[in-house]
Length: 123
Image (cartoon, rainbow, N blue to C red; front, top):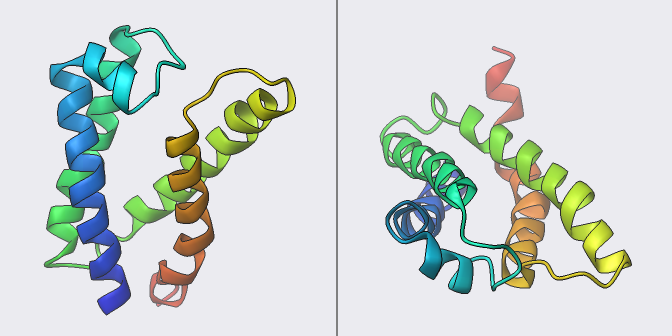
């Protein structure tokens, strides 16, 4: 349970800051979060909205950790998919990609399987 709350707190801090930056100032987000790998478009705001939803659900997860844990599975799937279909090909073809984001996503994909309460979902 403590590990779940630590993950929720990390989500609140990281996804919260990134979401606010992405929604309110996509130009700054393109420069900082996305490390100039992508142009500042409305897609950055769209991604910011997703991250804001994750931050809000993580706040609720502090009070009901098991009930809100499916958001962690969503993160595991989308971050893992992004690493496979965006970051890995960019690395392979020596193209720009947000390395900081890729590193954070990789850490999260490695940590989440050990934090997600798989057995609680089967009860």
